[in-house]
Length: 127
Image (cartoon, rainbow, N blue to C red; front, side):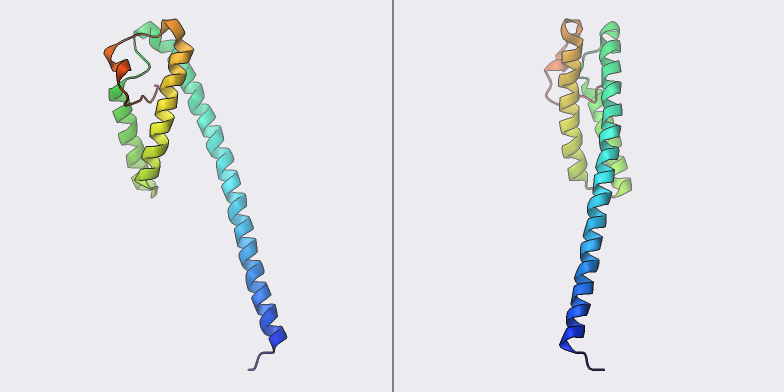
């Protein structure tokens, strides 16, 4: 069957429209996922706030290297299981942990226990 130039143009336009629709769907889903991630991070932040209230009474500093190691090992296991790049997981969680320590320390203020573990640059999972 011979196609006319008009028919080929129509096929090409439909193919491009299908790709445009798929790209719109990808963007919509990414926006929805980002909203869910923000909501989860807000829940995590609230737990950091709880930890900042409890740790001083227990004499626990914001930075607990052993806990950092536990959290990173757990996250890396989940990342592998879920097919997330280990590099992405490590970079994100290291930044999240560093921020968490700084936030906890600010919240604790002068109630923050001081210890050798606080001088470490490893970061803390803040829990």
